[in-house]
Image (spheres, rainbow, N blue to C red):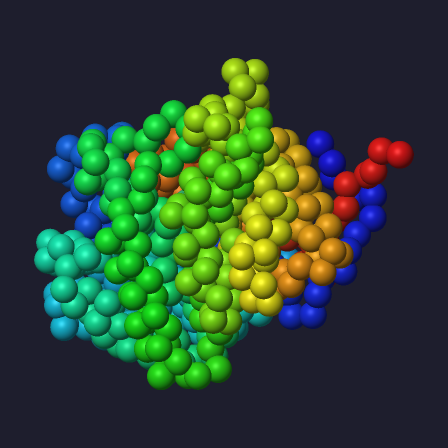
Length: 404
Ligand code: BGC
């Protein structure tokens, strides 16, 4: 475990330092969403329903208080379309007021809010009319975004339109081609129609945000699997990666920033993805323990979209052992610092996740810096939370000791 950094790298000016969450994963009782419905209709791969989650819909003040006390200065959270537009064209003033209070509450605590407009969940009515590939989907999304003006026009500087569009396309591909299961290594083939539709929705949402306030920085956050070619499989790797990742980075070349989200790596040989070796350390999601992932992800994104500022919007580890979490973050931050020193324009780092949360089908993989009691909802910060938050006070990134 590396608690004391060997040296440090100053934050670039204006650097975002915080943690991320997503509404459905922490709020609880998101009953009007497609996911709630999936959770209660016997969908394979869903082990348990989200139910109350961390009750953050009511306890967001406590969560933000904690972030500020820990030393963080930025909080990425998502607002829930299913609550804001419970029926087509009917916008809930109460839900909008709720999210507006969250934005105001963040500023009151010295936290800058980054608002995600869509993080995997949609209103049930939107899913029932055919989801992203149905006629008019992008316009409906843009209409929802325009309705969010009272939330976004409160000084929000960063808006993420869509979280992990590439995973949305991959999940649509998996659903079309079978039972929605994932292969032992790599990702299912993305659905090309969904890719096109989601890029259109991103463009429409970006325009809608700019109508609200042209100075808001808009972008989207892309899952980066850190594809690594082995045995000379460079071409196969590039071909495998393009529809799963690069096409979404290319679509962001005119954006104000790109969100980089990484956890592990995927090695590709001439015959496709190669599972991690039997003896590799694995996390609770069964992903290979690989803290260097974020450095590779940043450098790759910068190569595909040169000149576009990058923000690490998710990075972390599912583990019950907080020492491994500390070790993971020490390795990851060292990579971020090295990328900055090499001139990569990294404008922020937001850990995944503030809280243990509903990991899309199960509460077992715990990514949180903060644990919560499922009965009382009492929050308990883990040692990693204080360690990570503390760099918000020194405004530096820790470096690992170098072996000569
Ligand atoms: C998602 C999060 C998820 C995390 C860990 C990302 O794919 O944006 O919602 O919890 O990774 O799996």
